[in-house]
Length: 400
Image 1 (spheres, rainbow, N blue to C red):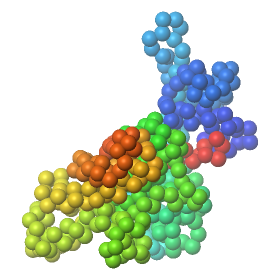
Image 2 (tube, rainbow, N blue to C red):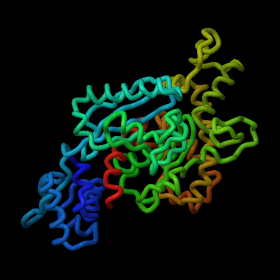
Image 3 (cartoon, helix red, strand yellow):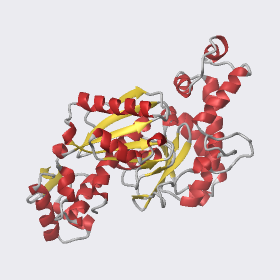
Image 4 (cartoon, rainbow, N blue to C red):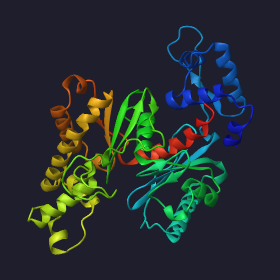
């Protein structure tokens, strides 16, 4: 098994470093690997041959456009291991599996879940995961690690999620591993999105990035010099709970005036409800005012796709306000790229352009001009792809 191989006493840090090169940069020649790692060609060749011998790396072709003998390209063997990712939303779960090369092997599966912090809901959750794995066509023994993306405060080192199945009385990752019979880890949803985007999305190869997760709440993921920043206990990036407003609106964290009380999916939902109650005209008016049905955030996102003017205007006012707040983040981190992602990123320029306006108005020009502001390429799949890739990464983490 892959995990057994990597945990073997003879496993070396050089093997992990070489595997990480393939993970971050894809197929490479020996000369390219040697240069990127800063080690000699003979040393690289020796380590590479060891990885070939244990079935993790193979030759995939030759480098083109060489007048003399073309060097071989080496890369990971996709079928040497599979990784399960789970992305938890406010009222849904999304499952996926990637191979050792980081390719998703099937379309993601999304299910609705009525989350409750009790053992009955947890057992339903376990059954849903087992059902997905059984239908995936991948034998559970081939899944070498699993990772779940969870919103809020998550300590990935000890596997604790402080607002998800706290009824268990012990670390969630430990319980999940016992119940599923799989190695299991957890991480913050925004950090998973950031990691997925850095390997498979719009900021691939960029060393200094801030990823903004605009979903039910607000959070940021931070990449500094090519590495994810976690903070001491994995709690970094909780900008949604910075005290910004004197609005007396109680945030779900229990405090008032948090950034996300005015600039998040939950804030957008509250403001749209208010506008409809005040007589605003929208494709959602009948649902709320005549049918007396509960409005959801997805309803608003669907209405924006239909070019509903009230929904678009509400989103854009919120986005300018969010940009105003993010100006401080630009001034603080001076990133090469600021990526706008999360559930609301499916609205594309409707969200990103007003954010740019707010940033431009309130950030330092010299600093903001350094930062490219873009929309997530992975959009609503960023958390799932990131979770799959994080599961792969964490096998190597303790050995690099």
